[in-house]
Amino acid sequence: MIAETAFVHESAYIDDRVEIGAGSKLWHFVHVLSDTRIGTDCILGQNVMAGPQVTIGDGCKIQNNVALYKGVTLENDVFCGPSCVFTNVLTPRANVERKDEFGATLVKRGATIGANATIVCGNTLGQWCMIAAGAVVTRDVPDYALMAGVPARQIGWVSQSGERLDDSLVCPRTGERYVETDGRLQRQED
Image (cartoon, rainbow, N blue to C red; front, side, top):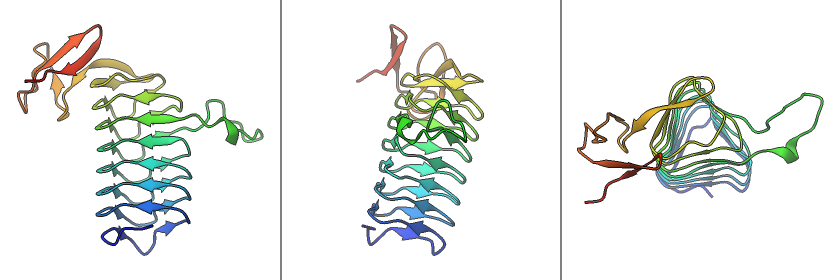
């Protein structure tokens, strides 16, 4: 079912049993495979492939040349930079069929994945985390963590608005305060 207010470019290809929410925009050469759900107000850039059996939450922005394979779930407000990569098996071989070994990948609310980053399947990216361009994520990522490198390691914290936090743990953009406890960051409630 494609919502009446969704936009699907004429070059996009939509398989059967697909849901596309209101206000979403699918641009040139997007391919959405069966049993995939795209939430409201999403943008899928040129040459994005999603599915089969992928879930994309509301407000997600997926830049050009990204493939979301079976087992990938994006919660609301996730940003995927151009050409970022989601793997689907840990030990691929051209001569060995491994479609029953696809690993699930969960990207939680508000996460940002930079251009050309690689997310190895079977990992969870915490809410509001930020993955630097070109990083290779090989393990779970905590909420609000700033990750960079190959393999990716935590180099700091970011706020919900995506600003790098200094030792004060106060967002320079919004003034929101954060608290670190046992290696985890939480936004301080008023």
